[in-house]
Image 1 (cartoon, rainbow, N blue to C red):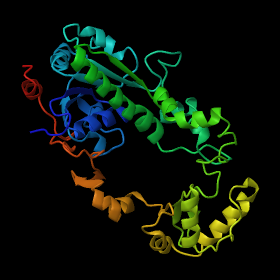
Image 2 (image 1 turned 90 degrees about the vertical axis):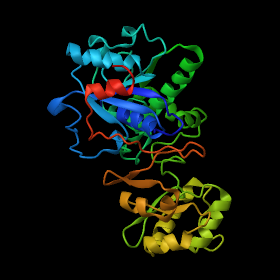
Image 3 (image 1 turned 90 degrees about the horizontal axis):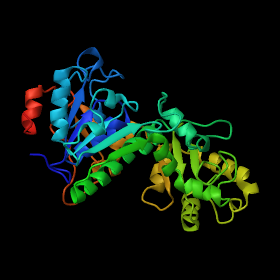
Image 4 (image 1 turned 135 degrees about the horizontal axis):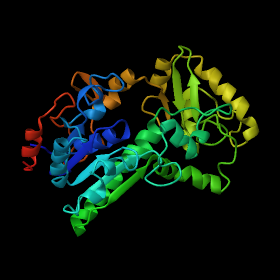
Length: 367
């Protein structure tokens, strides 16, 4: 029996990469019943583009392989979609329409929420062009703000694909599903990664508009420009991240780092920043990362070790929170966030489990 706050919600996912399976994972982790439709054969779900045997993004739902260009495959998909609360797809604009499975092709299902994930959106001059995370965050202003003074630095594909993309699609779909349940009216959720990233940049845009983000990249409060919000190399080669922005936390940091009152240059004066950065770098270089972790443990100094993925999974705080778990033989993030009454859980479905059309149709009473 499926549990979680979204139990009873039915989602059809048209197999894709990156943000769309992430959205489906989020919904499935919270109890939604998701059936993933993938093309059959070598280009289908069995052949992961990254060569992964297990992908956390694909967990918690079974796969139904259908050729949507064939009448029989399209007929099965239509039956499932008309029984679903929502659909997720990430094709170029117009592709689903050409298959006869676009939003306007289901007049008999007015409550359907149709979630569309693209980089550029369903409209606009770039809507029909190809792109990837790097392009979307570049055009949204985020990439220019992240990195060193010399060059932008890629923040993995977290800001675009998953932050501005998958999370916003999930949020938009849940908002539309609530509206559909209240009014009986479904709608299209046009989730463009560029729109989501622009929205994520709201605080930075606000700071820039008020002259508080005026320095070149690498010279502002949150981009490594200030020496008390950055990363330092320890004597062992590891790194420590510090962020004591508030005065009381800065005082605690100085005390634990072994600086006497007044020993460090006044941080409120930008002309002192080079000397302050040099003093902090020299101090961190005197000890190992493990030493500094012991020194700052449990304090309000806002100082933490920079951990690898395996170290993060093993850290006492993350272990106590159950932030990671073992699933299908792979250590992976647990469902998040945590709910007090109806917590999420990884469902029994698996991308490694392919189900026949008869099983999928019977599951939703669409046979």
